[in-house]
Length: 493
Image 1 (cartoon, one colour):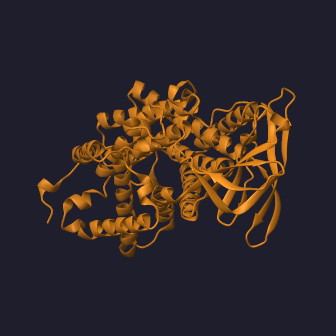
Image 2 (cartoon, one colour):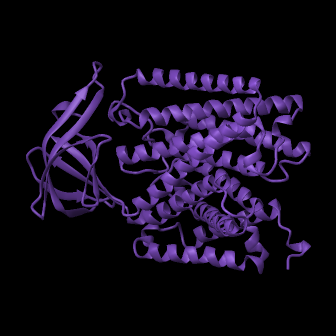
Image 3 (cartoon, helix red, strand yellow):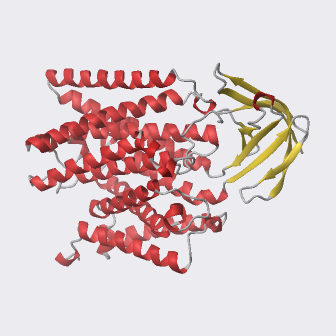
């Protein structure tokens, strides 16, 4: 039975997260960084099965061990996400290096890995709790569909992308005109032979009037051991798929330019990609449903004057996004930006930035005037009546859509959906910081009449918006992004 001594709160949540960081530091000192190559198949399959069993056992034993029950609460989830934001900020401020140590290779840094694994455990427990609760309360699509799509999609994508990373094969092939090639260079700089042969027939390059590359592509012929003879053209953003591999146009002889007789192709195999994409599409669907539900709820209950205000805000946000996109689109776009994903990715993000900017203005106004009427609500998202909260909900949903559009685009352009590029790192921590705000706003503490709780909500929103500004344009001035970000475009791309 639960007693008063079992009442855990934010203090215990931060202690658990802090304990994991200490354990991670001890592991870093004793065994060194995480060796992800050790998780290649079938090890990652065994780890996945054990991980799912661990979550299931934790949920089953929650009534006997209160600490397990606590893991499925906001008081556990919010501190875990705060730690993730802090560690990701450190990652975004430091230059990440392959083979680096400690904070200079955060993906192999034990505290970073343990905190994100802890969040994944909490996520799994929350999903199980909601699924079993449906047997008692019944299924309500307005409440349960967006929840399950967002949470289950994130759990699937985060788990499979992490464990499946060891099985990704990424090799480069240097092809010369008229010379069949079957040898590739691995990431470990070793030569490997493939069961296909590729011959470069012609390298194609188009330029703008100022000489900047507009397009570069390779006309190739592929021969397989089965006797297949395939002729195709590989463009930037237009890879060719065959036999589990995707073939990308990676580079060329930049000194020769359009006269290059060499083309560098990158071949990528990712057996876990269908599972990751399943998570992505679930999150996309969840974000769309959440946006529509919040808009419908606000418009259905709003006065005529408020509806005109919402319409004006929508028009302003649309115009701002359009003119920003139009000014950007008039530039000479490098090949990587010439993609069908470019317009929706940029437009959705700018629209989200506008809504979140308006939300923070309302929050600051309330802080200055000490009028927190805009932050009154209750613990259920279905009945939120706060203007800042509604704007943040829609803004976060659009951030999610924009981020996932970017991931799908990156997979077509560079062969990876998420590489923790500096821009991606700051996008992730911005997204996480708004998640912290939303989850805090759903707690009874945040919806109490205590001025301190309301001030904390406002400051959380301000901090999140500052991180958003760093993601939008501040990243260009950070040393961590100079020369290491694929989002920094130049004429050599």
